[in-house]
Structures are given as C-alpha cells and as structure tokens.
Image (cartoon, rainbow, N blue to C red):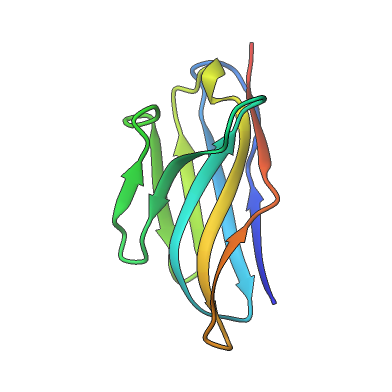
Length: 120
C-alpha cells in the first residue's frame, strides 16, 4: 500500500512564508513526477508546481518567482517553499505523486490536502 501525506499548512499574514512537505511511503519501487496542486473555494483545482525525478521543474506563472519546488529522492519527499504569500494563495494544497509500487504498477496518488490561509 502507498501513502502520500502532506504537512506544513496553516495561517500566515500577507507577505509571509510557509513550507509544505509531502512524503510518499509504503510499498514503493520508485517515485516519478511529484507536484503540488491547489483548490480555492469555488474554483477548479490547478497545478502549482511539479518536479520530475531528475529535478526538472514546472511552475505556474501565478507563483513563479515566489514559490520553489524541490525534492529529496532519498526520502521520497517533495517540498514547496512559498514566499511573499498573498490572499489569492489561500487554498487547500494537494500533493500529487506518480509512483511505481512493488508490483511494478504505476499509479497516481493524492494526499489528503493541507489548508493554507493568507490573512491579516
């Protein structure tokens, strides 16, 4: 069984910073792309940033220059460093990972989501 668990959300003032973490665990042979999505109230879920196993990144224009995605392959963990947060960043942030399990099956896994609220 494979699990993907996020941590690090919370309440932050405008202009502040947060770091989200997401760890994949369980019966894993390998982890391919990992990424972060977010969903604000009454909006569709959108890609924030993704990173390949080799470290290539894709970052949404709305957060480029403020958010940084990174990963530690030894820990099957992906991070999202968020700086200069504003109200529009308020959303539930979801981790996504494409994982090959011990039966050599590739699957897409989602975390449970972590709330990020930017408010004064």
